[in-house]
Length: 309
Image (cartoon, rainbow, N blue to C red; front, side, top):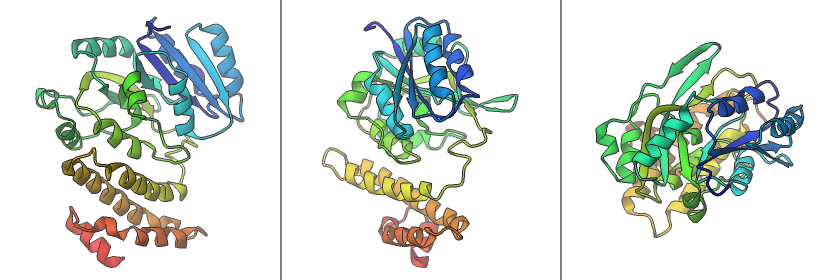
């Protein structure tokens, strides 16, 4: 198992209608140097049993069952049980694109095995598959600086900095403690800055790796949940705690501060839709307690928001 290139980490929770297609999208790669780690996160439907059956059918599949702890906890379990040189994160209602692991391998080898790769993706809505709008041009590929790459990629149209577009060297993940914070939604908002700002060894894959389903009923992102707004406030605090450490430059702190302002402004814009929720007052209180984040605003509208608070 030490010769494996990829560990595909798949958190599984109540996805019996999608799980087989998800796993099959990896099996159909016909790429022998990979394992599939299915982490059954306390599923209440048939997903857990389906994981075990898939492991019996395919030698590449490994299954871990655990009590429900959420997406972050399931990913962390997958990382800890992985053996591959690189981690590929795949949500169990999504798919890997055809031939994507072979293309990813080529890009990794051509670029000297960087700490992590950034890939392209597509979305699936019904029967329609739509590729993302961005490509990695020679300018960004030649930057060789995490801060400049992060700034540039933020300007790309249709570029979601979700966990699944990053393929991370397992040793880098362990050395830098790049585990996900348990129990929060939007966990990649906290994870991605740590991923970027602990390395200058970044690679690019201009082939599509990942296929997102954007129309699944009951998915985390499609469900209205006030917890996501409280979790964003928590993420602001976690970013403060991490990036006030001495290892980070002022330039990096400024970038993170700007992202914190975007998060807080987003929470403020979303808050009204929860006005009937019994936790609405607590949310408004939390927003006001974080108004200091809008000091030295990067946009004039943030200054106006701070005044309104």
